[in-house]
Amino acid sequence: MKYEIRPVLCGAYQENAYLLLPEGREDLLLIDPGDDDAALARAIEASGRRLGAILLTHGHFDHMLGAVKLMAEAGVKCYIHPEDVELLTDPEINAYDSYCATRPNPEVFEAETIGDSVELCGLRFQVLHTPGHTKGSVCFYDAENGVLFSGDTLFHAGFGRIDMYGGSGREMRASLRMLFTQLPPETKVYSGHGPETTIGAERGRYYL
Ligand SMILES: [Zn+2]
Image 1 (tube, rainbow, N blue to C red):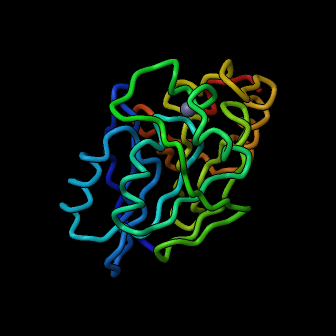
Image 2 (image 1 turned 90 degrees about the horizontal axis):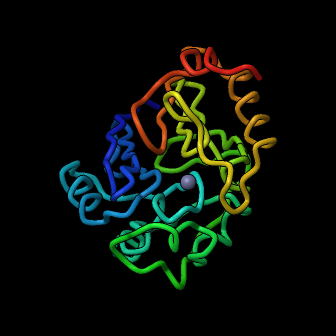
């Protein structure tokens, strides 16, 4: 299915949340609602759609703080890899305590866990487990449209930090190698921070 992608910059760390608006539907899918639920609520209202579901690429605070209020208001579910569930309510390991945010870290966070694929709001993604930044980091891959939502695994001209809780340089290298060898070079990459890029543009920067 075709869909429009609208990025929304959130919070002090300029995290990219993405609204996905599937053609011919009245709902939207939200990826990584960062620390600015007001901006996200405005963007959702401006779209004329209702929030259908929330996907998280990983459990760091700057990718999920906006989720709690939006989930409660819209009555929707939020999905994350099982290995990152422990991050959601623990400010020591989700980086909340090391930075600054505009709202408290959630004490309760009702998240659903995801497997190898996910289908929400009429959109289907392969869930590629890409540990290295966190243990439960994932990328959402849409082969039909050649699109990857890479979270903090792969950026334009960089990759996510490997020195935080659950991080691993060895796993990051394996995850990047998997993306670069398994995905077509023309795949568009929408990262958790920074501008969009492609697998082909990033692959040339690395000796893996
Ligand atoms: Zn992160």
